[in-house]
Length: 107
Image 1 (cartoon, rainbow, N blue to C red):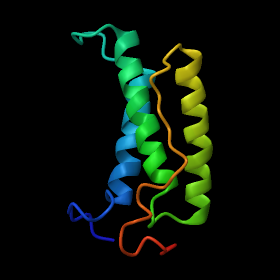
Image 2 (image 1 turned 180 degrees about the horizontal axis):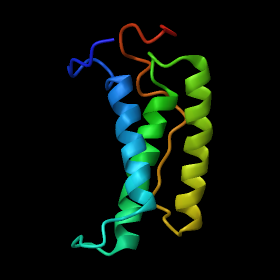
Image 3 (image 1 turned 180 degrees about the vertical axis):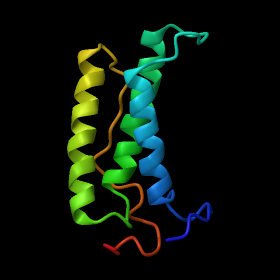
Image 4 (image 1 turned 90 degrees about the vertical axis):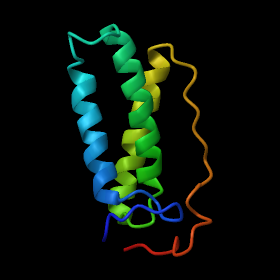
């Protein structure tokens, strides 16, 4: 699959997975010399991880197995944010990518 970026296509699957894992790694070890306190860094990164996992669990090019893994990870990261007192996490049960052309593909 090409990672060409257009407004009508979902984000490239591989780039989204790689970016999400990079965020998870940074979440585990926030930058000590950053302008923001480490807890604030972690909150912001966790919100982005939740967002990315939401799109990954609904990504039209992800296999059913990958979608299932991402859905479980999404649930855990939402719980992590909620347990940290971050009530700003918003998750929708609807699939924002469902209206895109070719969204019925499972490969």
